[in-house]
Length: 71
Image (cartoon, rainbow, N blue to C red):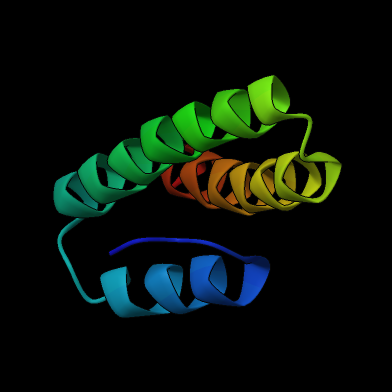
């Protein structure tokens, strides 16, 4: 699932919550990697909005990963 904004990040998390924990973590980490690459791309292009959006999505995914790891 391609995540381009905060709503899509939340939708992806909701969709993945029915998956086993290991699968959730794998999907979350893959999405994180993709967003980190997007953030670097936006930074190179000087796209401030894109960088902020990617950072917000990364925060949302990071919170979910921390929740899972705390269980």
